[in-house]
Image (cartoon, rainbow over all chains, first blue to last red):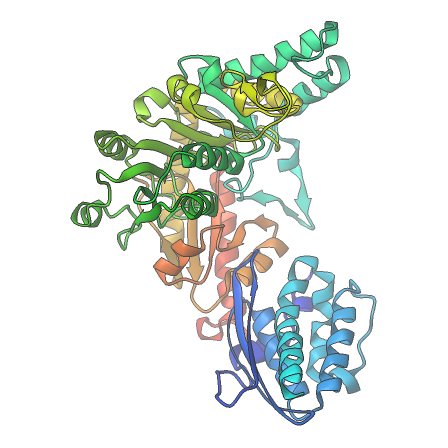
Length: 147
Length: 415
């Protein structure tokens, strides 16, 4: 298995310099998700402005895949609607479970297309999903609170 | 000493290749590989002697019972048990420790104390948490020193083991740090206050000669699959008089004497603790594993591993950017070596090593409190065994240098 397929430059760049990292105040929901098999942990906060995701802030400790995936996700979702975020979560999940069969649409996924290679490494799929699962959880909690 | 290249011929899996490279299996603390002799013994049992034990009275039942109890006798001899009835078969070491915590826990009361250590595997933490939650007893623990040894002075100052202590449960050899703990010393302290000494020997029994009497413990847990035996079978050794006092763990077939609708009486040890159909073929396999280890000689295995551990520690400590967790000298330590590469997460280390055929483990190794105590979120662990070669340690060291340079531009890798 060629690891360059897994460790794309985009992923390593986001790992070295995480976007929107750190916990910020003024949030509507906070969740703590872990990957018990490897110990990766992530605290993630969502701040809503009506239906818009005004901010996603997070503090995570984990492998390059889990950290980069969370960073890329914040680029994609901040400023968009909650509906868009949940829809993209489902599409990302589908791509990650496809074992490399789904060719992602760059217009939709932007930097997140780099994770298509991860879906060929079953042991690492959970890593790529950590941030997205936390985001989905936090968004649903924040939406309930808003209403 | 034995010729490791000859030994490796007994383990066909070690001939496997990963792409262009030979497999380098350094995850034996997770599970060991199995020699042909063990696999053949299990196959032979299933193909020619298979029946249930004890309850089947026909010819095959008698053969299966003899084979199962024969496995028990071999294990008893292997660890120096006073009699085969001191060996209780469980499904793994976790179940053995749960049995100990559940049965000893039945007599715990509020105010009683149970002592463990911060270096325990989760399977020697959580069962005691459950026992304390159920009984109202208090859980306390040994801290460690910065070099990864039990902090005996701090324990003394804190009067960790005292007249309220009812159980002390410690690992003999740490699955992360490799540290070998002074069990006989702690057992003497436990016994002086009337406490029961439980030992998690999962990482010790496969690697060194074991004499439970000399160890000074009352209950000792270990597992088959880490000692070239099959998965699905673990062992709880117990002093017979203690086992005879303990209440059952699970109820079911073969653990009883007389069953009435209102109440039951229980079988004598070990069967009291073996409800339901036991791991029969696995006991046969474990017996074959014990024969295999005895054939090589536990002293020879220990000498091989000690030399290899010294070699590996020397190699790894000389790599710039690698930090070892635990003792860095091969003194009073087992063969598992955990480490981190600065700036590279253990999962990523594992992935790059895997792509080069080197199988190691990355994560918290079921010892999250220990990692927290050491200030590491997780670690990478290389663990060798009787079949590991110096060449494999060299392959590990080369792969670690490659990994470091792959990820960390400051070491001259790609940016």
